[in-house]
Length: 132
Image (cartoon, rainbow, N blue to C red; front, side, top):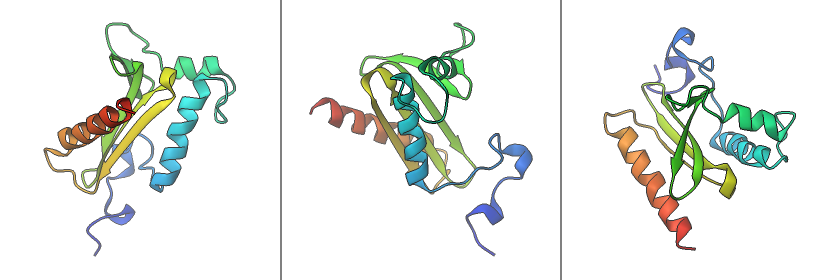
């Protein structure tokens, strides 16, 4: 029996996206489309306003925006982030649409420290980009 992959993933009821699986290259294309969408160049939604709506918190006291967390960061202004685990893997994406910049980090571990480790990796990538 495999110890990773769709055959041993969470049951569908625990997967908010239906236990969606994709290559990292496709996830990167999705993230790039989210960045392009705010500039009116996205392909998945009809308009820049649709992307802005998707990325905007529905309640100003809670930073939740239709699957994204909508936050302010000094390096990117208004940013959106999403992370997740299927109890075997962990991933995080940080996107700064107004800067047309984003980072993603993934690991095939869902250990307790995976979340912090990937946020640290994302932070290093952001710092490296800012030095350019």
